[in-house]
Length: 347
Image: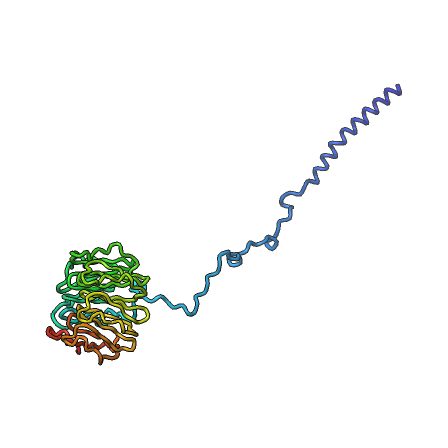
């Protein structure tokens, strides 16, 4: 009996213990894990702020400041046609033709002495050339022609021109790329210049074309009847000018060389010194010295070489029978034949 009672007590004890466990578990639910609301939320002061755009260091290099000595690019350099690389003495402002004189005024218009060989409506002219007619190079690189000029339509289609010259039957033009174009007769091949490159100056003889390259050499095309193309040995040339049957070259040291017909002494330039500009007429040659005085040689039947008294000259041009000079004050002087009024330039 005692064993039975003991067993019952053991069972009751075990049962009571089993019932006590869930009671304690239920009671423990009163102490739950803190809810989200009870978690500490960082204040605005504790949230790290991102650097603003102003505080982010730039990874690009700072723009270099403009040097004080640099000046704004002048408006002239904005033009589509580059300036011709020429001597400051080669102004292109005057031209002595066969029977007339022409010059460019400060406003870009052109004046003439003798027959009406330049229309009054010409504007914006920067360089002129003359023989029987007159050819004008405009600021925009186009070319106009008036009077007895061969192949005017072809000349009018030229573009991007920076230098011109003319003779009786042909007009020559230099482009800004250093190539050359020739209009007019091509009987002697004087227009065959399409292969020329790196040219910086051009000249047109009666039947011969000339191009000065940037390395001081001279290219030729056309007639060589008087040896006017025998210039292969020339070097260190800075300017060229052509008469009818002779060509003259100015060297960097101020001396002058010539080739071609010399029956009137137009090639007698071997003793010239201190020359800064040259101009060849059909039968005479004119040189400008650095001191503003002028020298001439060749045919002088009409006094076209009588320039010994000229001073303060900045440009010269030799015509068929006369010579034209430009003074530093903008006035003109002329000597030689005045049969067509080509020397009436004093006004």
